[in-house]
Image (cartoon, rainbow, N blue to C red; front, side):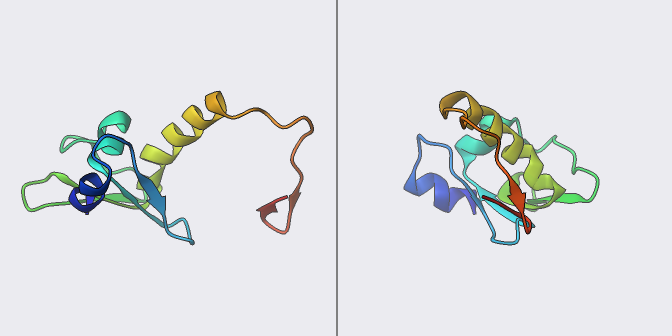
Length: 95
């Protein structure tokens, strides 16, 4: 999977999530920035899908999405202005 995304945007990190947030897809740039390699262990209740050779495919399931989503949130918080007032949480969605 990461080969397809890397082919489309070879110099930029790509991280896409399923609507359910139970799965994500990342290209090789995003995997590298997050430090996800063949030696990265699966998180508790999460799985990094791998090739037969053990290399990450770019498909992350359940808690494994945190390997990259935490990085994305960390970087975004430095790039985006903070809201002038706190966000309210209503019915499970940020408003």
